[in-house]
Image 1 (cartoon, rainbow, N blue to C red):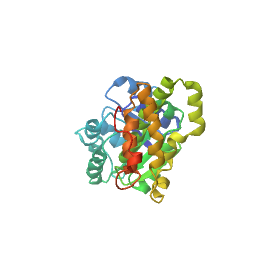
Image 2: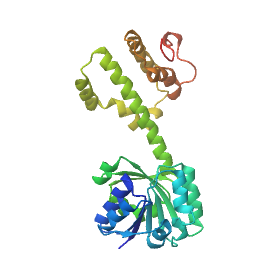
Image 3: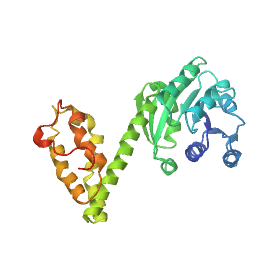
Image 4: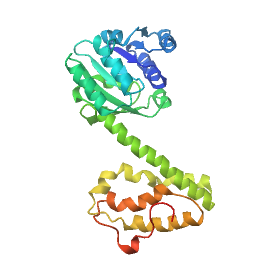
Length: 283
């Protein structure tokens, strides 16, 4: 039976640990708070007193702490995982951190014969509890194969993104698309509401068309087109921005998109004068 360690028993860490326990792994857990450790111990996990103790025990240690500083302390600190980790063991960093943090830990771990992967996650606690989590992993492919059963205890979707640190880089890139999608949804619904559109029907329309995610999910194909013409997008935004002006509604992200679409589509130089109607901001 594979010995697993989970360090950091917040919302996500506790859910990952519970899944590992229920999947039959030999589990040891640690957190700076005693309550979640005791709760998992009552379910059959072993309770550790430090990160180093987890490192000594586990073949695979999953790290789910809050930030870069906590990740460094939990791995490289005097009582960190690497202070106890055995040669041939694996440290899996789930925490949302900078790629350089992962690389720093990996370099130190390599000197002890310990492998490091960064397995960033998409979705929250409910996704983990439903065992439908998605992982984006950076590091050695063969090492990923060794930990895949552990990840699969919490979800079937495991994507190898490249060398160590690329899981964190992929998470950062995915987050850009997510937060800008939130901004896009906000502006689109503001415009629909101001104009008097039935919002329930509008939301159903978006679910049916899924056009709002098409460019993210087919970006490489879109960029591979021969000089994609930005003018349809640019022209299409002119009446939208005019409509927003008439409704006394600010759509700064939409106005910015109108200006930047020629650049992101790879068309050199400005859009023709007839298309260059509205400027960034309120017009």
